[in-house]
Length: 292
Image 1 (tube, rainbow, N blue to C red):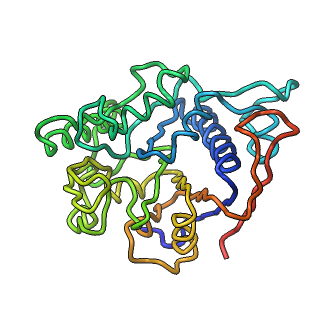
Image 2 (cartoon, helix red, strand yellow):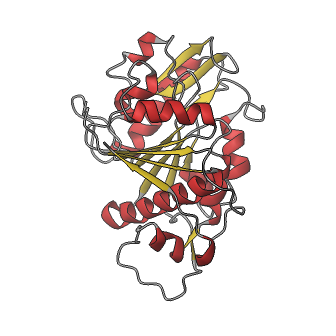
């Protein structure tokens, strides 16, 4: 585990961090496709990412990418209003899921469907869904791990303790410091070293119940991890974790072996801005707080 993983934190209101985070994800997507022909993106659940996923489905303009110094590889655009959505060779995965029917209000799959799919132009078969409605969560966890294995290692059999390397994992942050569905109460899941996906019984969660989640060793092998948090209490906790003043909660254990961690949090001091847009003259400024 890399305790000195490169990391940055960006603060702003919900509109500002949504546009900036979407631009970063899209830029990373095009870089990944240029480098190894596809972009693997793990999606967080909950309610916080709704705006972010809607922005990803819409795309961001060249002007926004340039504003945040996030150029696309080998590209030059004259029209600064051209929208750039996620590239076609993007593949979606779930970071966690509640064990409820897919149409249930608490279903992460439902939230992703409403905000991102099929509003994006990504083919439907590029989405790997956790079948958490399965009556046997342990079986569902093993099946999802097999799906990940097939995606990354179908051509090259997995050897030893190798882990797949996702291009970017989006994570949320709970007020109790949980991330994905990794809660402090689930010590066995937090101490997992070999499995990639596990079932947990999260009695302290909101709502409580059984869930599927990616594990810490899998998350910590990602090229990029992006925490996206909305709310003042979450923002305060995020900054404590970023500054390493809080080391006891599950989210503080996200330290990629050779990847980068980006934190996007809301800030009370940020003035309101219009709804997410892509015009060059309405690009919001954000407060950058580099690693101390």
